[in-house]
Image (cartoon, rainbow, N blue to C red; front, side, top):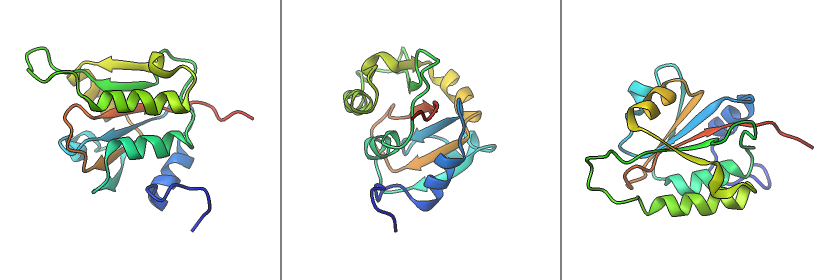
Length: 147
């Protein structure tokens, strides 16, 4: 056990976060995300029983977001013909990102669903959660740890 490390972060996930370098990406996937097919070339970490917001908060406590791109946090855009309103969980994400990055909402971008899948296929890691909210997937691009 370690002091100061959120308990939600498993040893496997901590190892992955340490291995990742600048510009590597990680997906925190909701329960409906096709983790196995999208993550054929990625490290897959199971976090069943956990939600995306709790993991996002814990990860951003240790993980710097990339400052060299406009949107180091990407959300899967709601499909145009989908009657789903803007997902309520996105407000939680905005609050969490703002807590950890001074750019706040400005560093969150939307990516069309199939473009999101293409980016996810290139991710270093995909975390499979039990999140039930729809359109709750988050892609993070790692930045540089500075003194």
